[in-house]
Amino acid sequence: MVSKILIANRGEIALRVIRACRELGIKSVAVHSSADDKAMHVRLADESVCIGPASAAKSYLSIPAIVAACEITGADAVHPGYGFLSENAKFVDILDEHNIGFIGPTAEHIRIMGDKIAAKAKAIELGIPVVPGSDGEVKNVDEALKLARDMGFPVLVKAASGGGGRGMKIANNEADLPEAFTTARTEAKAAFGDDAVYIEKYLEKPRHIEIQVACDTHGNAVHLGERDCSLQRRHQKVLEEAPSTVLDDKARAAIGKIVTDAMKGLGYRGVGTVEFLFEDGEFYFIEMNTRLQVEHPVTEAITGIDLVREQIRVAQGQKLSFTQEDVSFKGHAIECRINAENPETFTPSPGVVQTYHPPGGLGVRMDSSMYSGYAIPPYYDSLIGKLIVHADDREACLMRLNRALGEFAIDGVETTIPLFEKLLPDEDFRAADYDIHWLEKFLGMKD
Ligand code: ADP
Image (cartoon, rainbow, N blue to C red; front, side):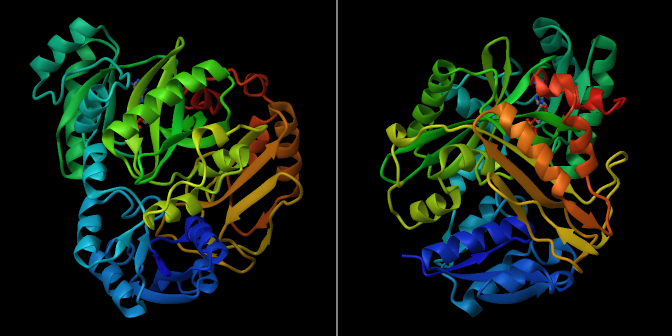
């Protein structure tokens, strides 16, 4: 059994894990950079270790520093949160070598899903529907042109090692393709050190719908329904909701079965998310995230299941605490990602939070590591909190969101709260009539 968990992360997700540990009677260890010595996760954990300077490469991404922190504190498992080392297979191998548990899947599964070409091939093998596209890597422009002509334009050139929407270029026609191909390759090489790219049919008005799964080491794989994450800016999610207004119970059960059968076939362990584009009633796999996701609370809200608790159970070799039959969906939930950014230009706005008064009340959950007087460092992601509201139906959820946003008081830094206030009265948004390109049009963004 696990008795002490080291959280290899910071911010709201570190808090989220510390809270689950405390409720399970497990000790928690926070690690932090020298820029984060006053961070809330350091204050809330049972113990803390400084693992390096402000630069993430030398602290939160330093495998030797994190392993040393486990050795010093006697932590017997690591929770990676999301981002940083959460999808780093080498990290899992090294923890294994040191006999330290990893709260997540096996290194092998992380490796397969981390390479988009391998992941897509695996998805096909497991019976998951995929976006039509090249059969693996595309090596040169001529090959790309031939494939695109067969497939029909527009097409998307994507980096095999891609993430965070980088290394992705659209070609609307033959003339666009050589440049899209070369730029995607160059960007991929610069961002990920790997210039392998592949080609997919570019879907013009899909929604982004992802299925949450949880699996244990006793052969159980259960799906917890979907999240609709279509509201994106530069391929980054901004607001997520569950359930999606475009799926009925039958469609949900059908895709859920495809995904859970695939996870059983894979022998997957832990929680994971299978991401799809959804257009004209069809699902197309785009990738699998082998970790807890930022937007997991909307699923927790409508199912009442604590996903971090389940992750820890599974890592201890226990069974999931529920079966598929136990899972039911109640009401509607929406999450707003609150970033310390200018709400119009999206320029990061680090600095001292003068006042911090988050909303509360029935159906309101605030996951954040902010406090009055906290200085947001400029070195990390600008996500400072997530506001999650839950109500009986979508209409009530929108009313509650409006109420909660109105209560929010945060001064000293700019945040994206005004963006959500602007979004709420919009008719298309209220009718959930949107696709993955809708938000950028709403924001008046050119390419
Ligand atoms: P990343 O790992 O960089 O986030 P994904 O493959 O998950 O990349 O895609 C991110 C987003 O890019 C999707 O949510 C969607 O908005 C868009 N996208 C990806 N593939 C396609 C496609 N074939 N057609 C249209 N949009 C796509």
